[in-house]
Length: 258
Image (cartoon, rainbow, N blue to C red; front, side):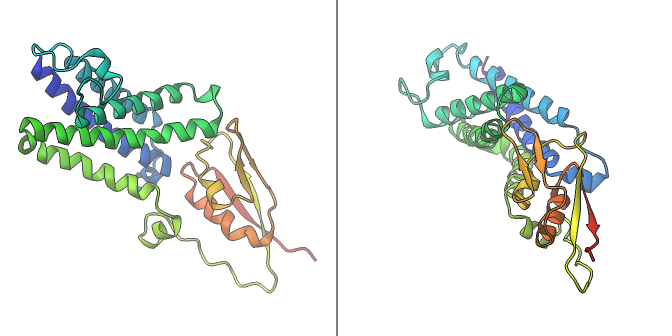
């Protein structure tokens, strides 16, 4: 049973790092930038589900050990009954990932903004799980065994998560997203016309972050936008179209009136 606990924990660790990586690549559209093809959200969902299942198996296996190292209530409530900090990190991390998985399944029945806030807690759950894994390896004397594999999958996940929340200007500077082309020199400022392909839009709200005066994701997940924004909003609108991972926003120049 100890071998089951060890193996399930290591598989869960790898799966949750891969799920975090693929989730970031999907949400930001970087897969499309690298390969020219859109990412499959189903892949992220499969990896995340697999990680939660293996983490659950890892937790339950501790109930079946001969020495009875953990009681059932310690798998739900951390730091009770003499529970250790490393166990508490794993418990809280698993609970956050389960909560994110449940809200993903209920996305269409809850307000979009509340779902997005809860789903982002999965990032916290992944890093708590990673801390639990490394502290557990240290306590069992297996750090040398998992060092190479653990670092191999952990570093891309850490890097992508950090990049996910960096400001767009910095991402442009380091070349991860395209810079806004310089506007043509005109005697009079011109506005833009905006169109959104709702069939492709996945309501990630990145456009709202770039141009909140033009784009707004409603509580029910629908996108509302201004089709003819003011001319001074044109740079923000183009930036919103540039960061849209699904390339659902079309921006055309609107000629100035007479």
